[in-house]
Amino acid sequence: MDTNILLESGTNELEILEFTLGSSHYGINVAKIREILTYQEVTPVPNTHPSVEGIFMPRDTMITVINLKHSLGMEETDEKGLFIITNFNKLDIAFHVDQVIGIHRVSWEEIIKPDSTLNGQDGSVSTGVIKMDNKLVVILDFESIVSEISPETGLRVADIDEIGERERSDSPILIAEDSPLLSKLITDCLRKAGYVKLIVTANGQEAWDKLLEFKEAGNPTEMVHCIITDIEMPLMDGHRLTKLVKTDDVLRKIPLVIFSSLVNDEMRRKGRQLGADAQLTKPEIGSLVDAIDQLIENREV
Image 1: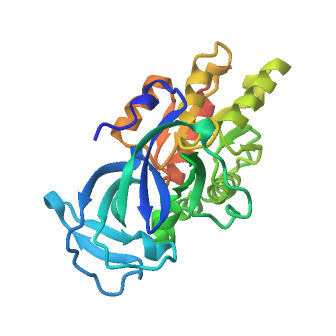
Image 2: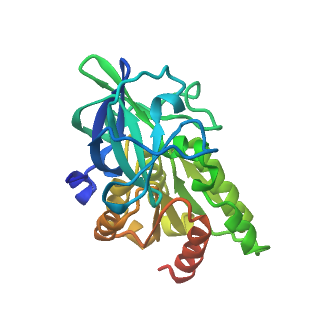
């Protein structure tokens, strides 16, 4: 499957695969998908989470199968359905779904961010909603679903404890992260690592507006010493933000780190083309701190 052609140049577009669970319609970013397979028999594994159906091995790779209906608290049926094989956070996982409807090309601007009733700070299974053909397609937060089942797949917060006591740093860092849960974890970890001057925004558009505000004030490289951005965000994604920053004569001097569950070889190539100074996958919070340290030390002034 050829994925994310449009993200190549930071055009703020993505492709969504629409699928069903019962009568409800859901979506997943095609960038997370390796392939789609018809249902195959799986081998149950004792003492695993109730949402884990078991494992199977297509082409010599062992893959865990998650029953998406069970993890979302929906009534399960005997329908065989399909497996959506995904890769994110360096994990290969199959999600058991009923039916695949098709792929839609959309702009991040079209994705409606769930309000706080659906998306509290304790996490949510939805990252956004798209209105399509008079129906609502809910884009699921697959990282949250997986970390709920297996917490060790989330941010490795313990890595920060290993860093130990550090001097306080006044270097201001701008963060663009739409997940309230991850945003809090990232800011807590950075504060623990000594970075206390944090400017937190909920998406690329908010971050870009802040940068333009600082640029208008005349001192953006002093107001922001480093930018950390997710890729998947409503209104403006991280690749678009990276492109805007790195094609601006003034703002391009600010080091920018892409910190996303989507960072794989293909995404790394795209991020490099757009000018990202570093790219890390989301569990590696300790490596993020190391990258920030180095980039701030070597930044242009």
